[in-house]
Length: 248
Image (cartoon, rainbow, N blue to C red; front, side, top):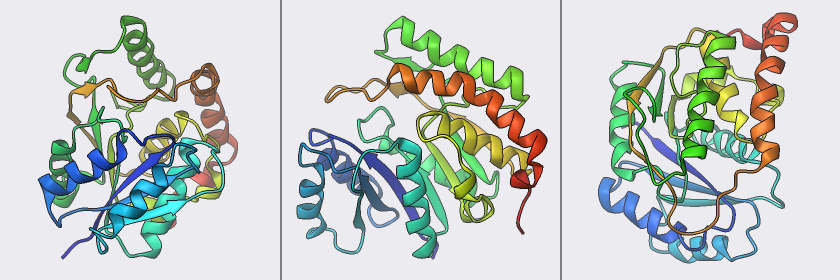
């Protein structure tokens, strides 16, 4: 039986983390394990997870990091943990319910049935499926993906999407030491590297909802990292092309 891991990075998600974990397990039973990667949240997020591990000792895991150094770094820690523990399929998911836990099965089916090596839960593949975001935020996200697609030529409508699934093979082929972006541009870089390695990527439509509890982690620094990061990726692909080739 295949092993599925949902990686959820957290920082000050005490209002959401227990609800999210319980929701995933209530919907999917034993089909998914969860790894919470917490960046030493001062609000006690990790303490709440530790208490819940007693209830789900063989499905719920916690990886605590010393400090907050970025979304990308948290996911890389989670990927490495999952590879070491022999998981077959990996899923990225936010803790704030902007991603619907019901959609995990849809993402899983795409890669399990070999329709693709990577699956993207896309906000923009069938119109604009975003709920409760201010228009300025919707436009920024939508045109950021258009911008990435124009310059990189990657055939993905939602390159900044954070609700993704990977086959193990992709993560085995990416040298995480070469990943340059630790903010939300990490999502762009993972898709770009997977695409350049000729892995098949498929988008499926999801409805994205703004968080109801807690605070957004988006900052101007993160936005500008994404804007300029595209050109850094293109530069590295031009002069360090071996980074973007499969190992096996």
